[in-house]
Image (cartoon, rainbow, N blue to C red; front, side):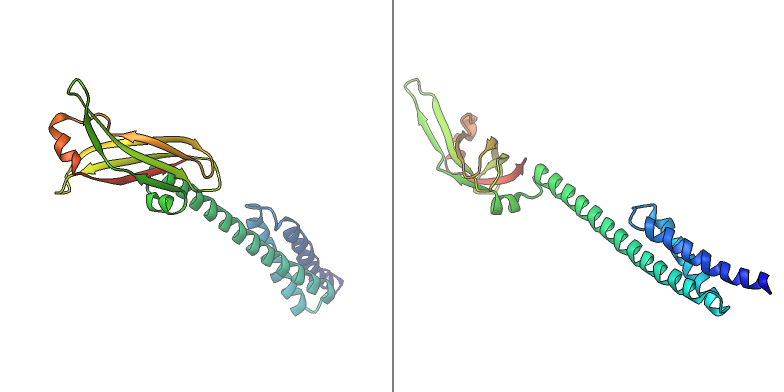
Length: 205
């Protein structure tokens, strides 16, 4: 009879011990996978002890602690999963920002690009000087660097030429002026005079 009582109370003791271990380790990422199993076993042992009507107080304590441990494990793992998802999203967004995939977003939030009028003038040596004035302004609140690709297209939508802006370390609110398309092939010069200039891609660092 004493042996049966000892066996019955053993379930309650195991429930309490496993529950405490599970609770103490429930806040440790990865390790808390084992904590979850221990807490689950503790609940089972506690229920068995209650069914056998032995060490009720210890069994109830083991079950309560184990349930708290299980809840803690679930919350910690959810928080870890959310943090990983956020980190992955931030990384992907950074890659897209640097690769030009977020051009529209950058133009909406971080950079103003003002494209002037293309000009072509002949100098004293009958050489034609060409330029397209472009001003960029960092409208974000942090120092940023930008790469801007601008292309010239004719009235049929065909690309005539492409040029680039490299604006390095623009302070918040700072502007910088550039001259693009200073070297135009002679056979494209007339078409460039009536070309449409548009932003193709913007990268931000």
